[in-house]
Image (cartoon, rainbow, N blue to C red; front, top):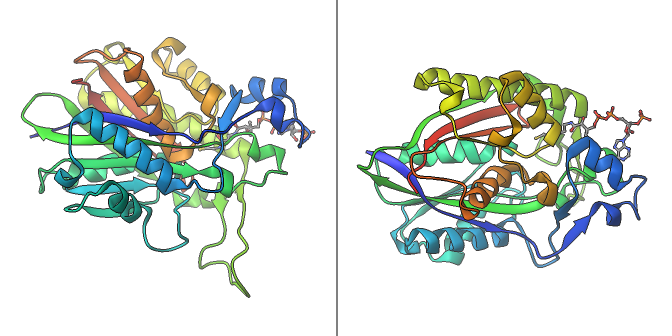
Length: 323
Ligand code: COA
């Protein structure tokens, strides 16, 4: 039994914020941001939007494209670092309610920017016992945990959601192999306080993500290269047999550095960070959706999905695309 991605969708806030707009409120320039990250703009939620609303939009699009009805779903998994509620209910339960997945279980999964890769593998594994279709979503509203006065971090992030419908079938291909890795020794490199570790004297007033940019950059380049090399080694294939690498979109310079280390052209990587910035768990499914929407995926293409981020976490999936 193989598990295939049969439908993809995305959810983006309507409001688009350019670098020029940011430069009106913080000491930065479009030139600095673009040359250091590849980012030109990002989408930012309005007051009525949240991880759950973006995830629900993405989910409805993915289900319609897969031709799967919500009531057929066995599981809804949402990877997010910015759940609608601090502890519970899970964002996945809100999505399950709002799409009408009345027969599905639902849970959230925390693996930061690697979240979609973790969720994909969790759902694929669960489907070995329950053959019903599963919905896997990466959704994050990074703007709500970002300090908009800190130019070192706020220029990097955006909001969005990407969804994938998984279906089991005897057709060859699909998700062939996944690797999930973690190293909690790097927990402080990228973290967000506000959980039970932080003693609270009154209502939680919110906290901002904190990052050691250089440390994260160096980790990301190495982790990214490792994922790609491990996946192809375990599948006994060469890099020349991989049509697309769809990486987490954190910084185009991370992707360029990994391309140099892997000694392959940048044209084999799908990059859409320019317009969307880093939407954490949403980047990989949104990039895969765009790649598919633009008609760049052919049946039997070998695709590597790769993620890395806070935790530290990293991981990847090798997919033989069946369309
Ligand atoms: N506009 C203008 N100047 C900025 C700036 C901004 N938005 N952000 C930082 N700077 C300044 C810094 O203050 C620093 O100034 P100083 O030398 O006077 O102290 C200078 O630019 C250079 O900073 P540096 O740290 O050398 O830049 P960098 O080339 O390492 O790029 C990042 C910084 C954050 C873009 C880069 O480290 C990065 O992308 N790291 C990974 C982050 C990431 O991907 N996180 C999510 C992972 S999932």
